[in-house]
Length: 280
Image (tube, rainbow, N blue to C red; front, side):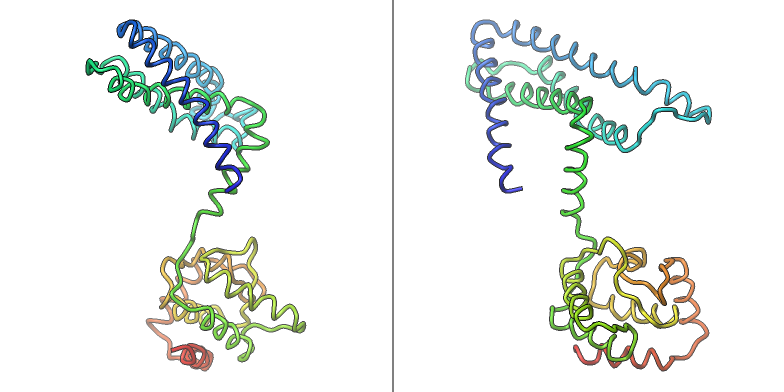
């Protein structure tokens, strides 16, 4: 991302400087020409991109409403396009409205500061909407946006130190709750266990297999959550397996109710207490 910052800055200046020049020149010679020339052009351009969207999606909308098959609808492309339209179409509308209704200040540089940002935002909106109709939007920009969102999203926040997380992992291995035949794999998983919880992220597939009953796993998760914010059962299901099987968050909730209402503490739960007693 750092390498892309100069490119973004240059692209912004490449748009902004001509916008400032155009706004200043047209307002200087004739303010009404600027307002009506810019306003009408903006309306026409926005109607064009609105028509493109309606033309493409009207038949799919009708098919959806009448429970017909939406032939040709590729959600991995169409949904991101609608997403960008939902953001930039209103920005373009507000920019056009501001150009048409705002009164001049009577001072050239103040008028440029007032109107140039709206022209700039409109042009950016046009460039984004136009991009959504190009082939490189699917091949390059959708994966880029997805990757950026994935990297920026922190799923939970831990208050354990790296040393405490390592001790939790070691305790799970010590009591046989996680088993390894390969020491190098154990070492690698230990490092990943610490890294995932420190960063508040999840592996691409569940990595740690707990060899304990579901009801005891719930007890472990609840103890683990004492110093973690936002670590939900669905998130835990992305990190752990239980006896080699994927976790169903609903089964964890059910087991938690049983544990609270009608079950005495098990030996495994005492062992889990032993794990966490070492990090306090």
